[in-house]
Structure formats: C-alpha cells, structure tokens
Amino acid sequence: MSGALSRAAGGPANGRPAGAPGRPQAPAPRTAAPPPWAASDPYAAALRAGRGPLFLRRTDGWLLPLDVERWCARADAADLEALDRCEGAVLDVGCGPGRLVAELAARGRTVLGIDVSEAAVARTRRLGGPSLRRSVFDPLPGEGRWDTVLLMDGNVGIGGDPRTLLARVAALLVPGGLLIAEAAEADVDERAEVQVVGVTDGRTAGSAFPWARIGVAALARHAGAAGWRTVAQWTSGGRRFLALRSARSSAEPPNRTAVISSQRAVKPCADSPVADR
Image 1 (cartoon, rainbow, N blue to C red):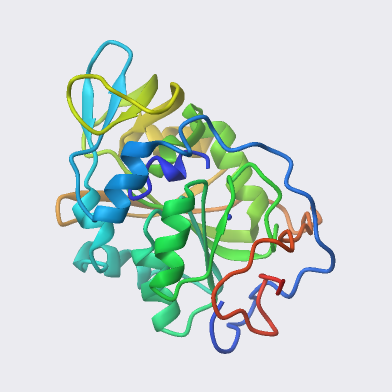
Image 2: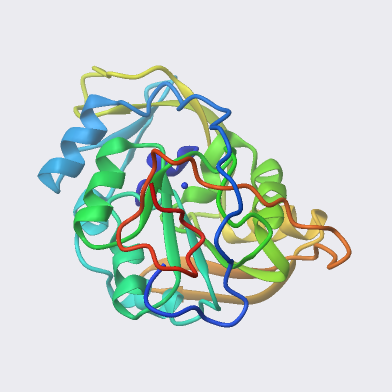
C-alpha cells in the first residue's frame, strides 16, 4: 500500500506516447471531500520522516504494518518489473510518496499520480513527479484516455469494495486498457473498517474508513465477474501482481473531465492531461 492509505481513496513528461490523453478542455470542480483519514497526522509525519512505524488498525485491534521505508525509497526491482509492463500514458492511483511516478517521469513517460494526502502529493512533486491531490472517485483529467492504471502496494483495497473500484478504473482507461495491480501476499478476501495509527497503543488522528485486503485469487475472481481479462500473473520480491485488460467497449464514450485550475502538476507539457494553473 504505498500510499496505501493515501490511495485509499483515494489524482506527463517530454513528448507523448501514442494514445496518451490530450489536454483537458475545461476545468471541472472537485466533487468529493477527502476521506476522514486524509489529514492523518501519523501518515503525514511518516511520509515526511521517510519511515514508520505506521499501521492500519482494524476495529478489533488487529494491526497491518505499512512499509513506509520502501514506499519512500527509490523504485525497487519488483517495482521496475511492474513498470516495464506499463503501456502508453500511466495513472498511478494512490501514488503515496511518489517513487513510481518519479521513475516513470525520469523515463520520459506520460504519467500522473493522484493521492488524497497532501504530504504524499508534496513529496511526489519534490521528486519531479506530476501529482494531484485527488481521490480516484473524484473527476480526474483524461478520463477514458489512460492506457495503464497502477494500483500498487495493496491499493486494490481502496474504498473497501473491489468491484466498485474496478468499475471506476475501467472508466478511466481506454477500451482494452491495462490495469497493473498488486495483491495481498496471503490468499485473502477481507473487508474491514480501519484507522491509521503510528504506534501500537491505538492512538490515531483519523476516523475509521473502509478498506479491503485482496489476494491474487480473489482479485482475479472479482475482476472476471466484472468483465476484466487476466493477461499476466507474477511474483517478484515476495510481492504478488496481476495484469488485467479492461473489457470496456470502444463504443462507450470516454468521460472527459479536467483537472481543477488550483491543482498544478510538476513540469506539465502541451500534450499533458494536466492543465496549467
């Protein structure tokens, strides 16, 4: 969950790959408020420090450790293997502190990260990665025109309802577009209300929010039921990934929404889906 949380909600480079989204036509207002944990002090503090401890705490007290150190480091070998599979213009949903966005931007790829955490967006921009403070369920730039969407670090759990999230991702992609998702290491299919905590004594700065933990088998099952096609499955560095193809028909028109003018990404270009202020 590299922004795991941030990604809970929930947000290009020199030149534009074929099929990359064009510049939005008009600004669109933001329609949804950030989730209650978006301003979580433990999460923001962990990103600023580049280290934990940080956990998702279930209402029954169970704790899920969050790998802040890995999220705040450079993209590792498992990340790079996933990024090598990306096609065209890439949207990183729940980009967290921005290691994947920064890596793709450094490669000259058209990329945008979105995250509901202000601290995550700020860190991504400092790395040179275009990023917006936005939920995946908000209006987004380039809807229906992204070639690849990333849901890394457990972000298939965003919103606590995998099928709703998969339907939203399909609407963001071009017909036949690619979703690269990182599943849980365990074969689980869980829904829970969680909080962000920085220590194990239960102190928290945010309200509970819905989250899901989805293993490879469960993700493939939910995706298949929603009309997605699994095109690859692999394990790297102990992490588990799926690549899925959208089944959205080319007859369905893309939803062309734009970025609000107050949100400006780093180094936008004329062909970018990110508008200048």
